[in-house]
Amino acid sequence: MLVNAMLVAPPRWNASTESLSQVSRGPSLLMLDYDGTLAPFHQDRMQAWPWPGIAERLDRLATIPTVHLALVTGRSARELASLLPLPRAVEIWGSHGREHLTPDGVYTSATLAPAQQAALDQMEKALKEAGFAAQAERKVASLAAHWRGLTADAAETVERIVRDAFRASGDRSGLQLLVFDGGVEVRSDSITKGHAALHMMTRYPTATPAYVGDDMTDEDAFAVLRGRGLTLLVRPEPRPSQAIYWLKPPEDLLAFLDGWTRAAERAVG
Figure 1 (tube, one colour):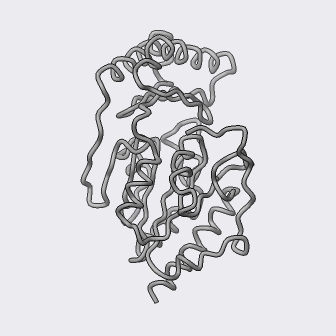
Figure 2 (spheres, rainbow, N blue to C red):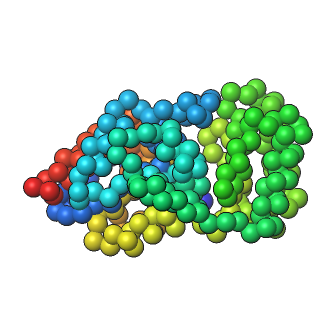
């Protein structure tokens, strides 16, 4: 679900703007994106470590029995688990909701249709033949092409290759092309982060929910929580979004996690 011209940039969140008192009254559900949200972008995606203090706060939240914590990411679930090794494993939804990794290591995934697999194969082949194999990241249900760190001309070439291949077959195969910070991704449009958020909310119907994310793929989850929970956009500067509030990283994000932690600990008593 893409942002349209009718949306506006959300106001900045602070503890006095939005009370977290509901979190202190019972179970809560906190869903967080990773890249651009919990961690700043890095030229080498495997060096995208979380902001200082994030891992410690996530681990503390994971110890609170009333908190249901989940990471919802465009990365593969297992890759994120290796990049963010917490003392206590947390639930991860990878590949925009197509992969599920439980805290105890149970892994499941939804497969693509053959036509979609073939379209992604062609895009990956085109990038490799043009000398951009290192920029291609193949996932369970998508292909991402990264241009962070490339020259402007090289980045333009990478984007053109993917767009040309997408026009050739991807748009007829039920795939969707999205631009993110530092690249472009072609993915299945049948399952999104919104589906992961809806699954979590269905599993924990009495929990107070919140979703925290930064880019266009997170808008699907923001839409699912509209009128039902708290949604927060994490970016250095706000942009039009379905999110209710904006968090400037890392200071606002850390303050928000601290506020959620304090409120959740009161729920335990």
